[in-house]
Length: 426
Image (cartoon, rainbow, N blue to C red; front, side, top):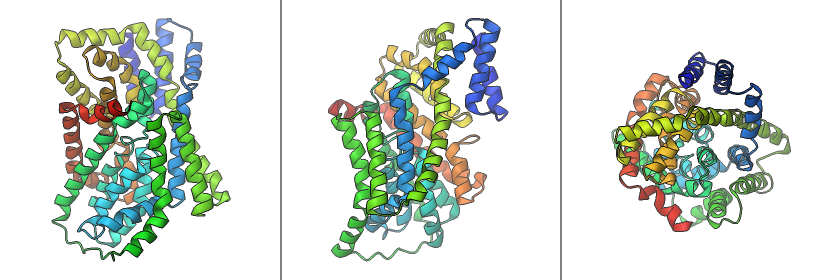
């Protein structure tokens, strides 16, 4: 009864446009006032405890690394490198968009960051070369969902903190699904560009030109490798990997490419702090909601419900997929994880579902939710960047969303697509 009240107040405030962390905090205060289960000071202490975890420091540093990568011109260099190989194909820029997002995913781990960085560079070029605006916006938005799947990944850091799973294993679990998503998106591009009247980009291919492009983009291409090697070798923690990645991009931007001026650094840090603060504010309410779930026995109640329904692991996974796709449509992905992962995770373990597989599956579902109305974050961000009406963008996104769902189905049918690499390397 009281938990229904808690969630009812929270969702009502969200629908009214109140900030998510404020909605959750106000709902928590209302719960404590009505039940008297604990003093209101529990909210303050839980919020402080919620952001004192060492691993959380990785999030602002990954965000900063992504911001630095864009400002330093690394994103443009990655695009030039990718385009050298496939730019001569019909629709080559659309394939370049996907490949660039795959490479950029190895630095920031944030879908909005990758969407902003790649779209700001590619959209003007695609417009100049005659690509339909709706299609250009759709592929840039859809490809950005790969960012939090291929390591590193800010949402997977959250999953790790909420479940005490190895963040490194979660990161590596996203490698194959991320490439499957990229392959699926490129297949949709291939089918779409066949019907378009596009000129073939004339790219002169020679070993000398290749060496020039490779020399210019080499340090940008090394950045994801630095991060992934740090994760695989285990020589540094996830937080230390994030710090090293930030330092690497900053040094390359200032001293090698010389594209980051000292005067720019303050603005870069300001943007990163604003983005990081919004995420930390959300995570600060994790503690109080975990306390509510434990006191009310919500996890046990939901577990008993699932068992009473005689759900097989497959049926439970279908239920979870539908739930998180729906949640991704109405609330922020991080808020959805904070509220529901602590409840559903023990049930998945009880049903014998691999915890790493379960965590990665949730993140993939929530990333698809970023493309769906009415609240899809990437949907509105890309519409704003591309200056395309949201309704037109939604229509163009449909085949891309369907192929991403096909990847989810493949993951459920073949869990090894997630677990193979973590089990091989850990």
